[in-house]
Image 1 (spheres, rainbow, N blue to C red):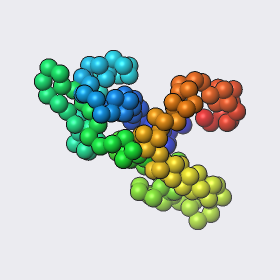
Image 2 (cartoon, helix red, strand yellow):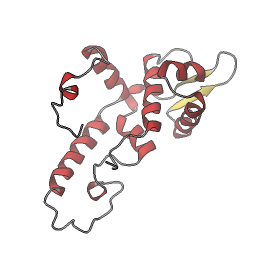
Image 3 (cartoon, helix red, strand yellow):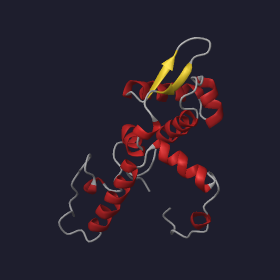
Length: 161
């Protein structure tokens, strides 16, 4: 299924690199090669992503032998919604319920399921805009990050997840 809610590899890679920088916030810069290795991201692709994040004012680059990237802003001032929107556009499952990238469809006035997608979009948008990178890191440390969620694996949330 193609749709606007799918997160691109570009966003995935950006978030991976950002969370490495979040873990080292306040420390020295991390070289691009190290960021790429730690996050299993092609270096050439990551270079473009990091330049994009630099232009957005999320990271800064330090030149030289001991250079690399580090966060320009505090992780509690960067939201998941900001990063996802920057790379992928909008967070809504359908364009007809998007606030920032709204596009009407021919069935909008008679659609029976649009109100549900609108509610889902509002919930996702609120969660993503209220969740900072610092908050995600804190959650992952409390919950034992990267353990498989058995409900998702076992199909506990349906076939669409």
